[in-house]
Amino acid sequence: MQLQEAQDRDNRAAQAGYACQRLNTMTGMYGRLIATGPAELLAARYGVQIPSGWLPSSNLRQGRQGLIIRHDQWGRRQAAVLRMRGGEDVLSADGVSRVSRLGQGNRCIIPVNGYCICRDGSCHYITMKDYSLMNCTGILKPGQNLGGTVQDCFSLLTTSANVLLAPLHPKMPLLLHHSEIDHWLRGEGPVAQELERISLPYPSGLMQVCPLLKHQDSE
Image (cartoon, rainbow, N blue to C red; front, side):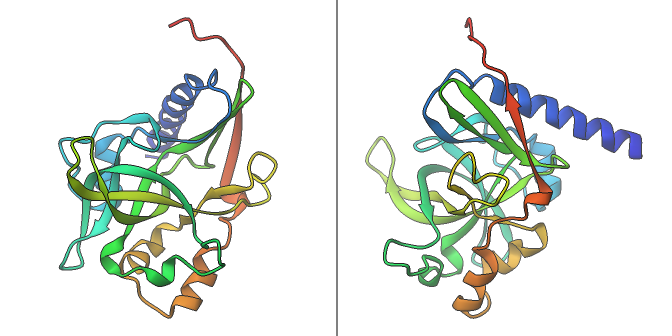
């Protein structure tokens, strides 16, 4: 059993690293999310049915379709495929928490395998040390698709980078421990206490940075 788990971790690391390696000739880019699943892992991890329209992505960013986890009207976890609007800091420009304006139906989780920071021809792949899925927090907002139809979209919430990631970028996704997911989705607890709890940078000791070599992609 332990051998199989180790092999699974190695496989996830190899797949995610290869996906990010394909991005390393893109310069000046930040926050390319790696959301490759697989679907079976996502379904088991979050206890949801993955929509048939979901496609793995090694380049999830603004304008692309991504998988989110939210609560339905009965408070049950539900997976959906929505368009990403971009990223927003958990604190607005006036220092007021965006969380304070959210109800239960406006919160979501964006499960990703990791993400890349690419600058000047070099990329760094950020992931959990055990290669488990990252639970990125998000907010749902109405937006328009290419046809002009109004539909739900999601934005990734960010916060100050931890000591591991600060040398690469001042911001990082706002991450939750797995045990905190339903608390976040339900919107329980006083806003001030919730903000203090979740807006702290995720512990550096649980994450890792993997530098990727420069290369020229011939494709």
